[in-house]
Image (cartoon, rainbow, N blue to C red):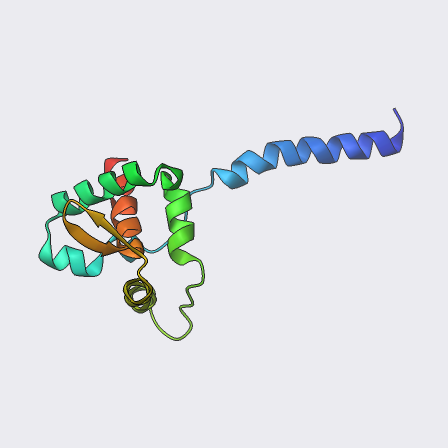
Length: 125
């Protein structure tokens, strides 16, 4: 076996083994990301769970913990404040820009909907 062929084969084999491990690694995010702050003050956990499940039915392409955590944390900087403050800012921006969803009579920002969906995924698992 030629040395070049061996190196290529070994590299491809290593990548084939490492890729699934990296992909299925536990998603790391703060628990506050899956707890909609305002909704948790006015609704009970069952309501949040139901909203999350209905959100996932409306948005099946976001039906994974990894995807939702990425969507919720993209662009968030915790350098100048907490994750909660960044999420609260994003929710306000969603309402300003009309990035909203209606679920069971609740008018929610897309961020709140995603938080409920993440809550439902983490609660049911």
